[in-house]
Length: 243
Image 1 (cartoon, rainbow, N blue to C red):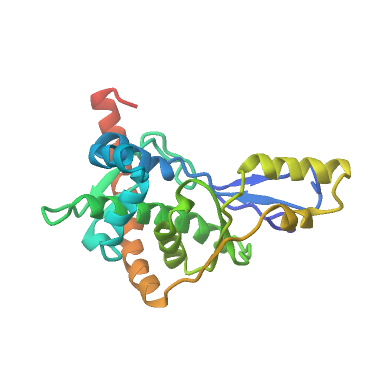
Image 2: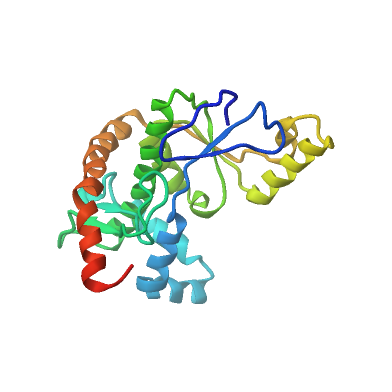
């Protein structure tokens, strides 16, 4: 959220009805985040789902334990998270997921962690564009719901972005933001500071400098993959008819 009328190329700028002359919101709308974990659980997580029924432990918690055993960088496995195409910042419905660097040394935990890391890289791609447009990003970055329920994933995001993050367990999602916007717009709330009374931070995450340096080296490789594959996505769609 920013006061200056700055627009970031390939991202979405939203002008809220409330404070429409004073506030702009720049949004990075990724297509797949926590959906990657759901895909893995539903497609390859039969053991985790069975354990969930027998032990009452979430399949996602078990998947997290598997990913925690893997070192940052997933031992050379990089994933492009475009399993349903991608919105910001590449806006390509033909883009698809890619496993780059997969070897016989990689197991389930590597894939799970690499999926988590791929979301961090995708967010960083948009964050870089925001910064290049001159918009300042003040911390901490707020995380809530979905994949943010994973403490491991929260730390991965913090490390990749090199940013302090804060987790809001009971965020209730976008409807709360809509309600606050409406309340400010009609004068029920004086300003947006009401959000401090509605939402409470339950965890604060600080980035690890060494992990960030390592992740940044991997990100440089990640960042080159889509441009190298862009035209091949089109060819694949034409040959198979799958779009």
